[in-house]
Image (cartoon, rainbow, N blue to C red; front, top):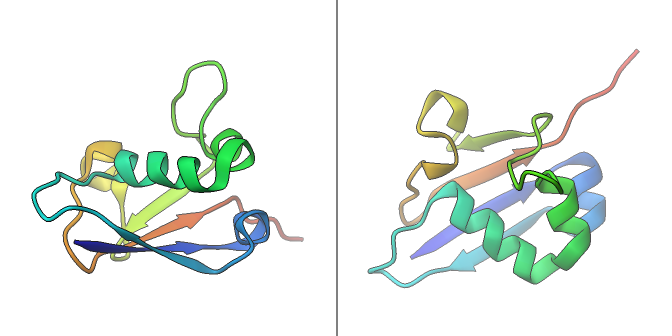
Length: 97
């Protein structure tokens, strides 16, 4: 099973690329949280601290995660299951003026 992760803005700069392809076993249940944990293993502490609250371990409230264009908040949160070929986009806050 393969999931594509897209990075934007400051997060793109942090990881040094615009997307990552992650492979999982076909029999493995893959959730948004599992994808983020795998990315934390790949990109280490800087990524983990950017995505997860240091004290609670919860997803930072300023991030928006989309699975195939739909907010995971409207689905099942970090427990949202992903399927082969799904795209998870991680959108940091957007500033403007």
